[in-house]
Image 1 (cartoon, rainbow, N blue to C red):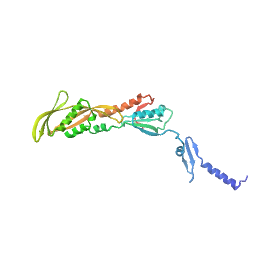
Image 2 (image 1 turned 180 degrees about the vertical axis):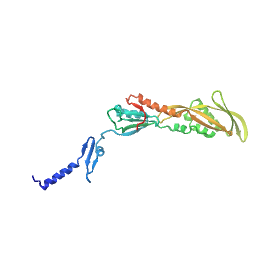
Image 3 (image 1 turned 90 degrees about the vertical axis):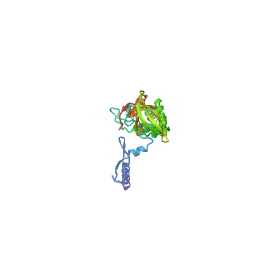
Image 4 (image 1 turned 60 degrees about the vertical axis):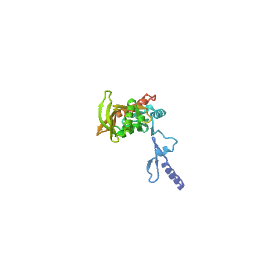
Length: 274
């Protein structure tokens, strides 16, 4: 059977059109394009043209635990998810399409992350931990951070700082430990190059801080030891926070327990989500 030139042209055109049609292979879409007819995957381009993606992906950063709990509730996928609590990084990561089911793999690319960030006030005390102060610098530091002090010892600490700052000239002579654990400094005040009467100043051994460790978190009680050194009639002060790492760990574990206690059915693991 003979074909006319018109029929031949139609056949060639139909064959060319067929090669440009998208081909589905599983969930992937392929298409033969001009310029040497290179085979390319266009799955992402086709998906972007749809009203919604074929599955959920992406990572959201949340500012507090209630927001994380709300996001967990909205996703409602505890059967395929794990929540990882990384104590070292102080972060909690929910992976919604995880490898939880024994026979079902997961892409692990749909996540929600909460990272506990230190407050400015705690960062300040942490940065000055074990750092020596001159008399005037110590007094100024105590007054500037008065809102973080807590308890009777903290009141005494403020009195110490105020006394030191108010004196025009102090020559510290000796120190002795009292039965109540405080230290008594003996000093001589000089005014206009004339020696004044000897006086005594009680220095607390410990003082208490009451501050938030993490942003948007609860207040936390933290103890500190007050240290000093006499040298040439002057005194240098410094403080040593008692196990600040333990305080941060305890505060972070409070977040972990809050998530575990919530009626969300998500499994919380201690570890890293890589």
